[in-house]
Length: 73
Image (cartoon, rainbow, N blue to C red; front, side, top):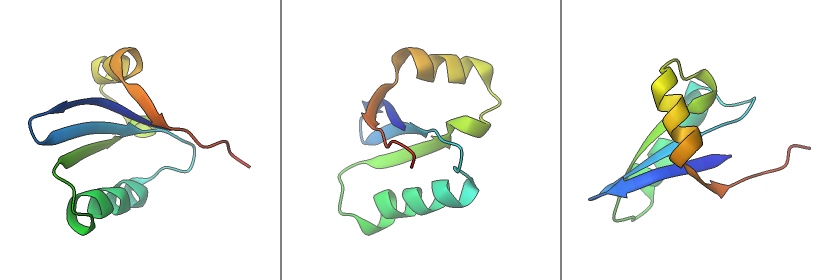
């Protein structure tokens, strides 16, 4: 699942969640969104599954809006 927290100015804050999410997944998604696609925003992406900052995790759960969900096979 991908949750968007907010877009402030030209930055979008995103958290990705899932069992198979790792540093490489975050890096690939960041490169795709920030370098390859001609989007007017910069995306700051965090791996929610391995997030150790508890207040940030609570904020994401409370205010983040799901924009993509995939059922696992």
